[in-house]
Structures are given as C-alpha cells and as structure tokens.
Image 1 (cartoon, rainbow, N blue to C red):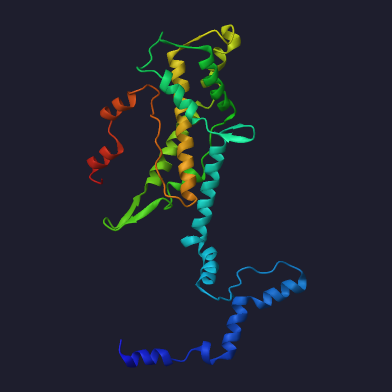
Image 2: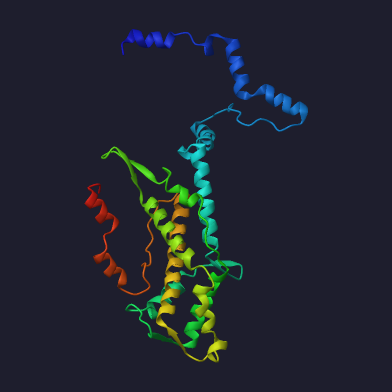
Length: 293
C-alpha cells in the first residue's frame, strides 16, 4: 500500500468523528435507551442485549465478548451441546447406584464377577455353572437394580450423529472427518439399543429363580444354567459400556478432550470377541474395501 493511500484512509471522513447526531443516534440504538426508559416507566422487564460497555483493559473486553460468543460457538451450537449433555446425564443417572446419599459406580463389581465366572466357551444345552450362595447373591442383588430401569428413549443423542457436532475439518482431504467423540457416540447408541432389548423382567427372571428362598437358604450354593448366566453377564457388560461412554462424552462436552474408554466385549463368552474379529469384516476393513479409508 502506497503512503498516499494510507493517508487517504486515515483522513477519510467518518460519521463517528464528524457527525454528532449520528453518534448520539447510534449510542441510543445499541444502548436501547428508549426501550429501557419505557420499561422503567411501565414496570416491565428491561430489554436484554445492551451493547454499551466501558473497558479499562483487555481483560474487560474478553469478559464481555466471551459470553456473547459462547467460547467460539454460535448460540444454536451451544444450546445443542447443552441439550445433548442433559440427555446423557439423564441416561447416566439411571444406571448409577446410590448408597448413603452418594452415587455409586457398579462397573467394578460387574467386571469382577464376569472375569471370575464368565463362560470360557459357548454355552450348550445342559451346561451349568457352580457359584457359592454368597457370590451369586452379591451379583444378583446388583443386577436387581436394572428391574427399575425402563428402555432408554434417544432423542438428542440419536440426532447428534447427523449433526456436525463431533466432526472436524481435515485439511488433507478437504472435507469433514469423524472424531473419536463421534465414534464414541455411535458406539453408545449401539450399546443402548442392545440393552433396551433386555431391559425387561423376562431377561432377569433367573435372579428370582435362584434366590435364597427358592434354593433353600443363603448358604446353599447355586447351580445356574450357563445360558442364563451368560445372558446376565451380557446385560452387565452393556451396563458397563454405557456408563463408560456417557461419562466420557459428558466430560468432553464440558470442555475436556475426548478419550475413548476401555470397553467390555460384545460377547459375554471370554475370547469369543477375538474369534469374531478374525471372521467378520470390521468397519476399517469395509472402508478399505470401498477405497475410502
């Protein structure tokens, strides 16, 4: 830019410096003076969105602009994130336990029981698993908490997969790509759909079938059909994964980086997941086949 062009820009007339009427009118408009005066006179609610602020330093400027920009998000984006977080918390709170006024995480107890007593091979008709009465009662009491949980209705969670919320722009491909949070949300939806099918009294009947009363006392050991135990473990693994995924997504929406949690396998049979991985194409296998990986 030539020196003369700079001087022309600097010396160009501006209504802010030469037109007092314009300046007064502008301040009245952004300050909403007339609306404010009418509200005071009538006793009604004062208008929002007054854009007049005084600044002493950059911190004052940042404090005013931050809530207006929602930390870089539009108002619609911020509202959508809040709605998603609200629905995720609603899912999570139904899956936590409560003791002496505090929320309790059931994941450790479920995983411990599955690792100790989960099946090592696919169950066949006539297969049974022997458990001590005490061990069975602890696990069955834990699973009993799911009787009060009805199937989850997904609204914002399901819709979020069709939004740009968890997509990011990739400079190499020149398009938007899925983030780890997107993958976590998709996995959460799969897990919820799986557990929804089992959230009924019929799936949990073995809890009562092998109760202390029906088996003759608390000290009497339990011989449970392997298929029934596998069914309960399968529900428990879904329970664990839903808690882990909702927690990770909620924390991410609260401003933290998303970290994919360690998830339990789809199958309650130990080692069966590895067998499925070798036999069935994965998403990455399918993408490579399509040539879009």
